[in-house]
Length: 450
Image (cartoon, rainbow, N blue to C red):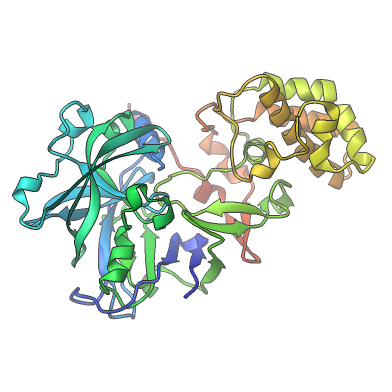
């Protein structure tokens, strides 16, 4: 059966088909994992940002053969739930992460990492179903790494017992993310293709052990700040009470991450240009923010008035080469060849623009690489303004303003919440349909504690 992603953006519900056959053991057939919610404050933002960088969403359905796991929502940035390891069960709070594929928790043999002293540790000597493996391994995330060794034991997910699951006992956690995070470990829901040590993801073990009837797992994220439940993760179905409207399916374009092809990103109905002919995108439940190419993020920041760090290289390119770029585009020069013909890039557009969703902010590359990237972004911006029939002065002024809206090195930008009512909507073109997000759905509020 082909793999498909189910996207229903406006209701905070999405589902991923994972080829899981029959039979469930829960009392109503649904495997549920619950979520909780907390408000976002300046004091806790660092923890949320750290957890978000590790990579790094539930329901009762008419289907009687699904299992649901309750999730906890922390600051609208971490959604996590509880699983059990071993017999008797040792409980751990984990992030359910479609951006990775391994299961890991802290090990009782972790002696030299602060994070291991702040979270529960798995003790193999206390489990009657433990089986030794011993193979060493390491996983590197965006803000740090964990290392340890593989073991095998039963995993309790909701009401289901996944037998003899291969997982990692972490003996070293090298990032502050794991110290500040509200989670103990990570349960990866990606494809086996990106699994370290070729360990089968938990969902694949469910498939092989025929624990569920339907080949779907789904997330519901509860954005109601007053609600006790943060949401649910459901294996084997979807809860019709948590969504309305028709589902939209998009094929998985590349197995590893849950990757698919998307179309343009629109700001107040206007194209941002970069993905007009398509882009690769992934659905990542372990990441709390929308991420995209710097050329698009700068346009979004400009449209909503967000503040970022001024890029000297970007302004220099617009100042010295802006008119030349404009003239070359008017002369029908292929956009992907403009920067190489000017001499700022070594290749015909293959170095940066064609790399899809990768952001250059925060890279260690300097000098000519940054000038090349700035040039390619300027080409996208100027080409967009030409389509709008703007004058040369307005086009160059707009490009210069976008340089000032480039995100900070950590990728974040801020905007006044008082201006939210004046901000434009964002829209994503996916599977020939347009999904609109309002400013309230795109931004999250940072609350101050006096």
